[in-house]
Length: 355
Image 1 (cartoon, rainbow, N blue to C red):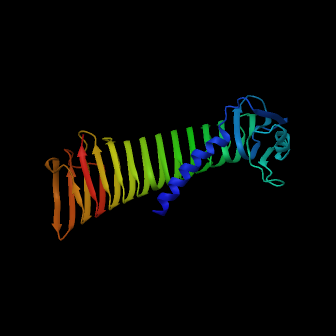
Image 2: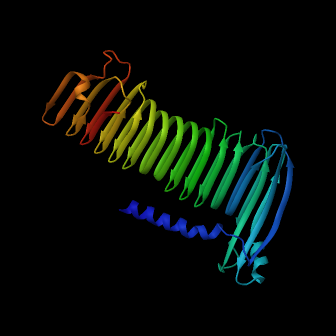
Image 3: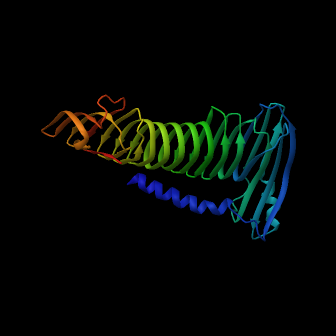
């Protein structure tokens, strides 16, 4: 119950927070451009950003330069306060050929008046060859494409990335949302958030009470604690899930999974798959195999159930005694299949079907 309350509270807070940064900047807003700097850089330079309360927009160009523009926007019922508020904003931008650093924050010292809205916005032009280290709280991050490594942290905000092309990337999102359209390789930690991945080569994800959606991924290692996971297509997947609902559209090669107190459904397991290895406790697993598939089945159950196509199987062992079930069989027409299914369940259910 405590974790449920935390989730609800976080959702409400994110909803209220949207009023801090998502402005249309209509009448009543006063804005000041406080920084406009350009730095000549090497192609493998680093961009370091520490930012809060606003938007960071990183776009690509073909120049070996990083251009930083910082704009402060304030909305208050007393226009005379606007400049005083802007004066409290800290924006430090410095750089060299190898690194450009930007720090933006609101200095809370010197007053208790909170009767205003503020957005500290960064517009950055950069070559995609750079590496990026970025931290943003209470705001929005947009990054077009990065060929260097990327380490990005987003709390109570929104993150959107076009492409991460390096083999070493790390993303951390808490109480917010993240969307990445194209990923070569990346480690992701998501807590009480929504994560959306387009196409990925290699992903490692730790998800706590978050909803994760993936279009396609070649290799995926994922731990899911609460929340939901939806994958359209995956080749190889290692999965640990607790109190979660998992849906996979198509599995091409192999899955190794531990599932507790939740559900797992695979819409289609391709004919040429290598292995399905699963341990299921207090949950339900539904596996749908491609037509004409053949595989070696080894199953054990303790006070659970295993349903499989017995009318299309060569059953070698089928023992059921005092709640213990042991099955050894070849499913399908191939008498010596290379594919294997090894499953164990305790107080759970496996349903194996052929489409």
